[in-house]
Length: 282
Image 1 (cartoon, rainbow, N blue to C red):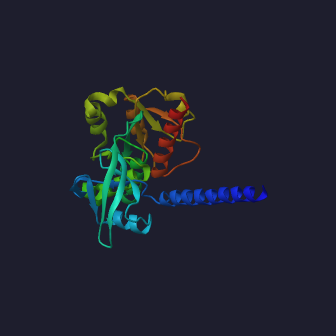
Image 2 (tube, helix red, strand yellow):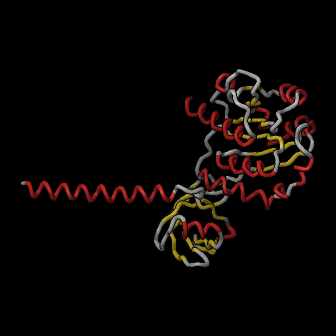
Image 3 (cartoon, rainbow, N blue to C red):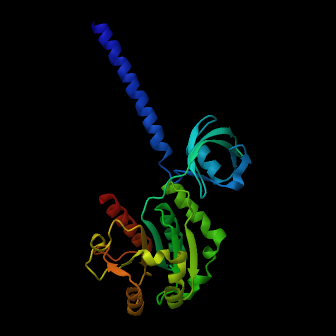
């Protein structure tokens, strides 16, 4: 009787050890920034297979430490996501075959950001954070406290800013690339361009303006049933009174993110987190 009990105990212990190993591997494989390997049509070699020969391949080899036959999470840029299997791996390239792919539904609210154009290094962070947290559209605008030189940054070229968006998609496990637009004049954007965006869809959105000088909370002005939100994030020095007055005349409502004065990228993450909290509490 004791012998059988001891054997059973050893079997249970072995299963626990196996479970711990599997759990450890899963955590290790999701601990870096590339939680979803983003693939594009340019990577396709036909029949559901894709060839990777850049930093994605290096990540799969050195961070995930995958071998032939292992499975990874992948997403087609602006398309479905699912599971792929490693078919070939060497020092030069990796070939994967997609096994299951399906589109993920968009969970409301759809969030669009208007952001006073920040300095280039901050811009990179805003792009990545916005893509990570599912922002639909980004409009970078001129404001009184934005330096003219910012609009000459190479980061504003599509081929230069897209990698930061894809990095965010990979981190947040999304595939939809946010739309990015640059506007070098403040009033024309708000008075002329904004009403025409998305065929008037933004006219139906809840318009929000984070402001450290007010005490109103987001939950007091944002109804969780709003399916679209438009948020205006100011520059490091804040919007000037004229800019705030113009936005308020167009339906933007001020609210507080807290008692702190935040950097632009922190404000972006903070407001998106608060919106998600309101959504989860409805």
